[in-house]
Length: 114
Length: 114
Image (cartoon, rainbow over all chains, first blue to last red; front, side, top):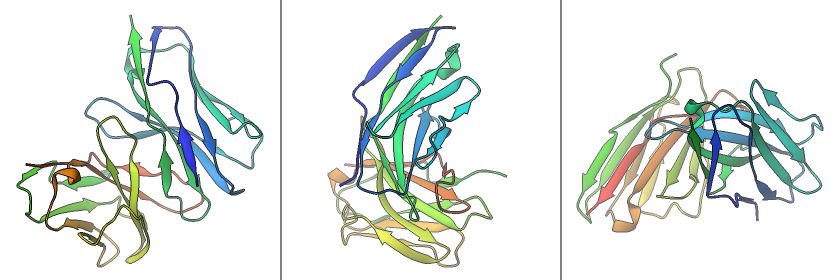
């Protein structure tokens, strides 16, 4: 079975500081992709960053970067220079090869304090 | 690009009634996904289409649930004989291709079964 686990229900960070959200996953597949999605309050989910499992290099998107540890099946998200607009639910998700159906974790609610 | 749209945004119904939701994906996207999200949880995969073909259904999708995408464009999700346990946010997503391509999510339809 494929699972995604987010062990931090809530996190908080001060504006301009750095925060790391944790995610672990389990799969027996070799062909998969990992994602972080952001769901602001009452707004639709948007992609933050994605990582192909076959790539060793960690993905980065502006202030967002991941630490992908394949052997440990860990995929954490680092947000640098946090902004008030980063406040949201963050979901870690795994997509399998050709079908791309996503398996989501339970989410981490991030609060950003001024 | 108007994004993924879903209608209605909210639906309140009485137990035992049938409901139908509509999803309009981004126009050139051939893949369409339905997910269900309950409070405090991440989205759970229900089913997906490639063009008009329904390629996979989750075990979560009981025989009271049916989804269609008749011309490979918009999709409908029908729930017959609704139960209180069907209360959830129903999310639709579309993507241009497989293999880790981004899924674009709609705003969701919130169903409340009284």
